[in-house]
Image 1 (cartoon, helix red, strand yellow):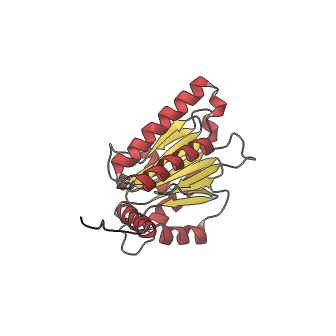
Image 2 (cartoon, rainbow, N blue to C red):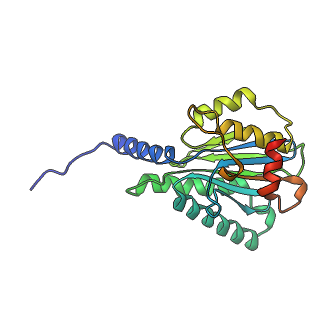
Image 3 (cartoon, one colour):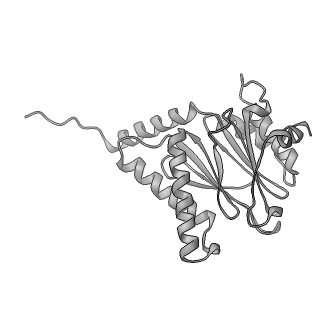
Length: 229
């Protein structure tokens, strides 16, 4: 009888993490940043039908990078989770933090127990009801790690370079157009990246002035106008 091949738990976790990071790095990046009236989401995405960002519930948005079918599955599960909780209890009981924790548990279990980890990073963003209250940006990694970020968040394979650009150029109190333009400039920061046209972008905002349905995609002429300043 042969001796089973042994791999240490540390090596298994390292291999899974490397596998997930390589898959994420093959995709295009996404940035989110706070501006004077909410949160702006900007991603490189030339597809007109496969979206990286969506409304999940009142004032809450989802965004993902990496393998599309995997973060789309997570998005749908999040919408169902929010709808059931809001219907069973109260709309106010559905929170971005609760949703981020649910995603973290799911991704952590998949990373630990499944043969293949999800090749995704996701963001749960929420806009506050008042400008005096903080917005929420929860960045969740492939292994279930949750990071509560402020000001801006970067997802994807070029996160370090893009993050350094935003660290140098981001400032509080930007208007909507300025936030979108800064997001596009940050996505173009990595060396060798071509200039991004409106057709190469997916942009949306969580705008508190919209009321309960704060999520608003920005496309077509509205996006062209925002980029032109």
